[in-house]
Image (cartoon, rainbow, N blue to C red; front, side, top):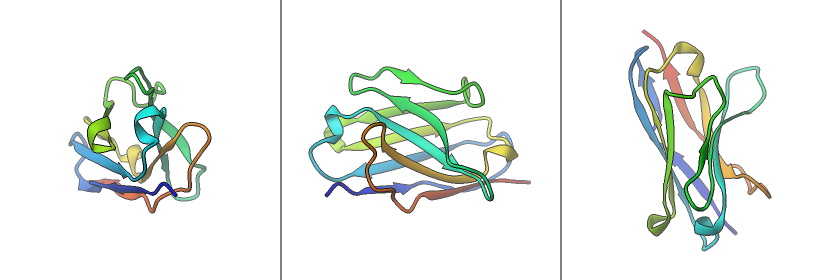
Length: 114
């Protein structure tokens, strides 16, 4: 059973930066397309970024140019570098395989506030 553990969240001022990590157990990580998602209070979980097994990335317009997804297959770890953070980026952030989805981890809280 693959487990996903997100970390790196916290409280940051608008314009600040955070780097999230997602540690995945199991041997499927390196062959899987992975993604970051976020869920703000009272809203649905939204896609934030994705990366293929060979490193191709994709982002929605809301974070393009500010967020960067990367992966270290040797460490079974997914990253999300978030720069120029805005209050509307406040949410719980999750990682997961694009398809088929795995069980969701506990997520990591990101709060952008002055």
